[in-house]
Image 1: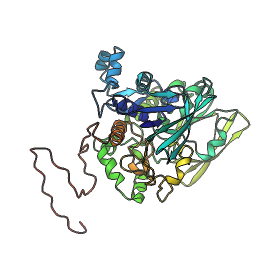
Image 2: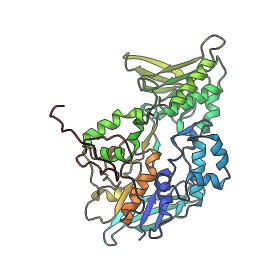
Image 3: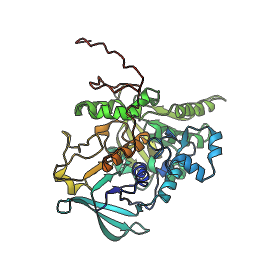
Image 4: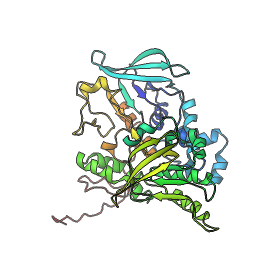
Length: 459
């Protein structure tokens, strides 16, 4: 059996593959059903940027000397000096996508057009069976295969989420109703519509609205932007706020009771679902520019609104039934096209893990339990491990999908697999102490530990 089989090749498993590549003792392969690497191709807008610094590439934060750093990608393209003078800390999304494709095209052990169908535990072999289908250029089944492995890592990522009231409208003939994941492929048809509605008050909704606004003539914009949040709120991007995306916070969150974790994830939406302040400023600037000669742009921006139901009027229009939560008021909106910037949800693991269901340990909500090293908690009779990437928000917090933690998580997985500190990881990563730690960390050599004043009950 192999040492590791990866299911899915998105940024998380690509990070793991890149850090595993220089380890001669590790036999690892990765399978992906798509024909090649692609990172949200429908949202690679000209001005859209990744919301983490370029240091949060696939490897740098644990191995800055790696072959697979973003800076080495620039060097291979003779672009180091242009990047140096550009003074950009945050990359364009298209540039991040191009970097990841460069890694995927040059890294060994990646098998695209391989669809993993099932993962089972074989107690006789003491290994996992991984069944897959090889796909041809048209995405049709070409042949079947099976490999055995001691360990599995699931990095199947997320999928576009469409709220229940709007699902019957997507892909139906007539007025276009598309998820933002497919926005660029349908942009011309959407721009040709008389009135366009954007649903969703996060970063993607703001980017799509801004892109449409810039492409519509002044005074004839005919745009409506609605979202459920109480405001078009900026993302929490303060220095200490960002420490929620550190290994320190991840460890703290994992140790909390399940009910507390669930409450925190829901409450911390502005850490990852808000809008970049620069994007909000760009929206306002564009709207303001259109008032310079008098009048107001033909746009409506309304937060605090949810879509109750929706339907088509003949084949040319869509009717949205809206509810304003604070006003407890309802209305109808007729539009010619809808872009659903309603986000992404973790892909369900039940299908691929059906063969492991008897061995899985679940929490009170029926979700797989995940230990601190990102392993599914399995029956002790299973001697191998199944790791998960970007499927553990309920156990590891808001940083689970964050690109800035991908390299650290990959290194944690590899250190666990090899049983040694293959990649030395920092003991402390945040100035914030998130809890009353009963085991304070050892201060750096030469530093003096601060004296702690005992707490009085109730203080």
